[in-house]
Length: 277
Image 1 (cartoon, rainbow, N blue to C red):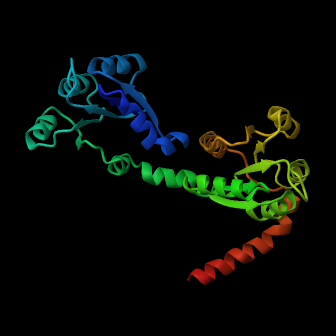
Image 2: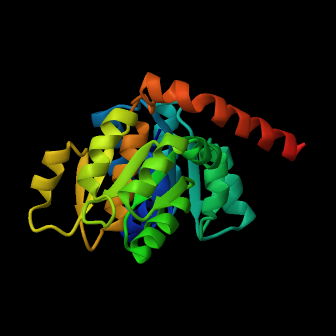
Image 3: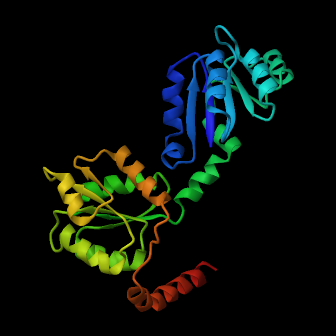
């Protein structure tokens, strides 16, 4: 899904990218920006309108204003939706926009919750995160808390373990979408956990968390999908998790493990369902 935002105020770009950061990270939305009506028409001509679901244009701009842009777009691309945006919420401006063919009309400051509802993005964010459980393995409690909070705000389920031995038990129960794995831990370190994980749930990708001087070497040794050095860049880590959750890996245990744990897991699910009735 692509949206083109047209506004002569350049700080609008940072605002939209911040307010739609989750949708962008989940791959649900791609934003394009034009800072004049003329630039917007050039963008549409050069890139085409494939996957563009909306043009969101300010009305008051120098040169070609929003209403003139609206008429030009509707003449060339009559099925393309165009919302007009203005700081002036008077009825006369609203009526002029509707008469010019706009599909909807928003006043500044934009209510982004309403805009997301118009686009169906709220439901799609929830759907994209549903069923995606993340296993966080780190002996540092503050890191586990940091990552839990960061991922749960994105709609992911999280389970934590403070060492590799605890993580093996969690892995068998959870079948996670992604594993965030520290390597320097007591009881069972990340390397030993990785060897067990290859036998239990080999298709679940690993994101390596490390404070090592050569993190890339650590990641290569264990076959991690990516590596993130401490102190962690939480935004980069969230993006990496979202990318892996979009990929069609199997999230499965080996057949031997699956057959051994399935009866107990199914019984627990039955008990939970009975309790909820």
